[in-house]
Image (cartoon, rainbow, N blue to C red; front, side, top):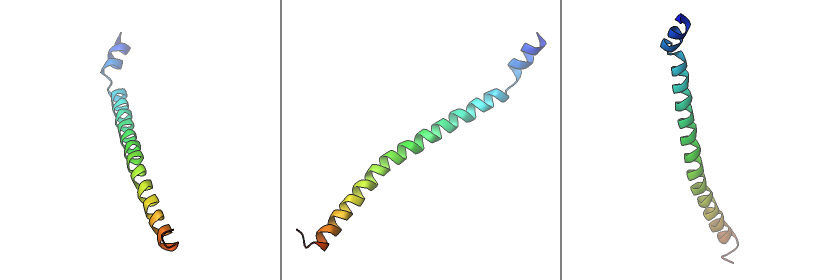
Length: 60
């Protein structure tokens, strides 16, 4: 019975779970930002490439 009482009062596992949840939220936010801004950057690079290509080839 004493072991169960000590186990229920121990908060180190709760802290580990809190850190795991925070890490998951941070990773999810980073992946979302990368996917959003990555698409925007890719479109910008393609637009710039098209403009350079048109300038180099005389608009043909």
